[in-house]
Length: 201
Image (cartoon, rainbow, N blue to C red):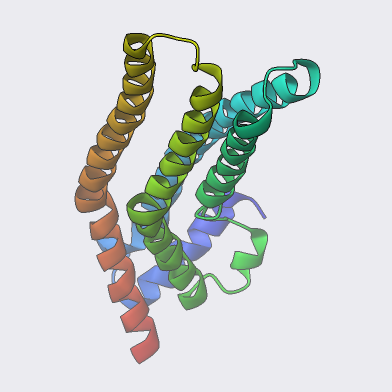
C-alpha cells in the first residue's frame, strides 16, 4: 500500500479519537512525515561525510605507513567513534513501514515518542561522547606526529582542531535546542494527548 493510502487511513484513525476531521491532530502524520524527510536528508549527508572520513583513515592504515603505536590507537578510536556516531543517529530514524498499516494507532505513536526522546538523549549525552572520542583520537595522533614541530605550531594545531570541534558542538546544540522547543515539543505534546485519548477509549 502506498504512503498516501497510509496517510488517509491514519487521518481516519486520528479523526475517530479527535472528533473532527479538521482537528489539528488529524494531520499529525503529515507533520511527522514532513519532519522525517528533512531529518533523513540530514542523516544521509552526515553519514556520507562520516563515511568519507572512515574511508580516508582506512586507506591511510592499509596503504600508507603513517600510523604506528599511539597514533594507530588514535585512528582506531576515531574509526570506532564514526561507527558509533552513524549507528546512533540512525537508531532514532522513524520508520514508515507497511506493517504500521496493520495497527497504525497507539503502538506507532509510542514508537514515535520513543524515537523523539532518543534524539534528545543523543543530543545531550551521545554527541558529547562522540566528540570526546574524536578529540582523544586526534590527540593520540598529534602526540606522535608533532614531536618534532615547534611549540607554537603544536599550540596552533591543537587549538584549531579542538576549537573546530567545540564550535560544531555549540552551533549544533543551539540549533537542536531551538528545534526541540519550537518544533519537537509541540509534536510530542499532541502525540501524548492522542495516546491518552486512545487509551481511555
